[in-house]
Image (cartoon, rainbow, N blue to C red; front, side, top):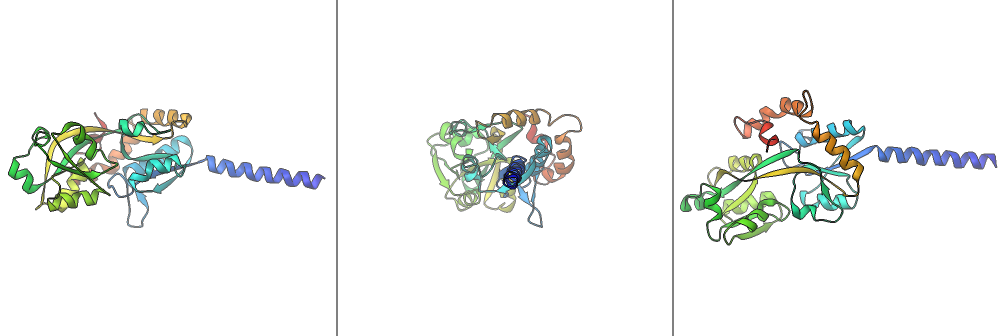
Length: 269
């Protein structure tokens, strides 16, 4: 009988230790195709501003961080199915996303200026230089992945827009290059990269379309995590805090795509 009791006790201890290990892991979802925020290094390991931010959050929560690389459009579904615990992936805070079942955002921690990659022939033929020029053009063709704000903003604000849904951002750029689409609204850093790779067929419209607040996505019923994350975000810009470390590591990298800019380009609304 004592042996049986001892055996049960050992099993319970094993299960308890296993549970502790599970509870001590923070599975962070992001799409590792968006440098300098979410990408991989030469060894295939996750790196970037959001990756460093995730590890800093893990240190703050005293949890081991596991980066889970997923397509951007599948991140919210992965959260709902508990494949991940939190999204830290340059995700814009929108009413459509917050209306989802058991989903919420943290307080914003970045503000992404959204600018536009334009088809060069379209822009030059119609003298498109500002947001007003573009959004008052009757029937302009906007392209973007369905999960991006690239389509929701012109849907609500442009004059009779034609909205072209594609599977990902690279496909959206190809549509602009070919002339099948006129405009692709995307974050400034991504837009600069796409234009640099296609200078003969695209132009950048620097007049901002919007300033998109970026938040961390969580399950709405995970109230303690939401509270802890918002406390973490509130201290990001403290002296010698996480943002100071990110400035040191990434200001020069950001300036390569956006001359004269650094991390502060994304911090202040």
